[in-house]
Length: 103
Image (cartoon, rainbow, N blue to C red; front, side, top):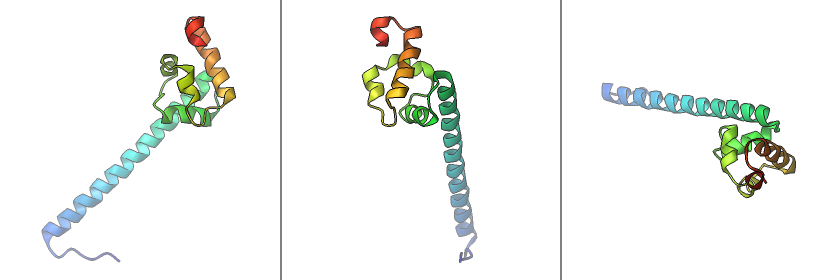
């Protein structure tokens, strides 16, 4: 049960707190939706499972080009990236990087 504010200032403070909480919740939902869209794009572009793409996004790999600048050892250390995902990432890297860097 919520109590009614006793003064105008208290009512205004409660209103500001509710607005702030609503804005924070909205920002969180927006961030989650944006991360899901990024992961879907990476999954589609690299042929990865959605979970592997989500693991990449969670570690800051928000576009397929970003993994080109990471070592395969760094990618291997990301939780949620399995052998199948590593092979697909390696195949993608071979298309764009010199062979000594792609492997």
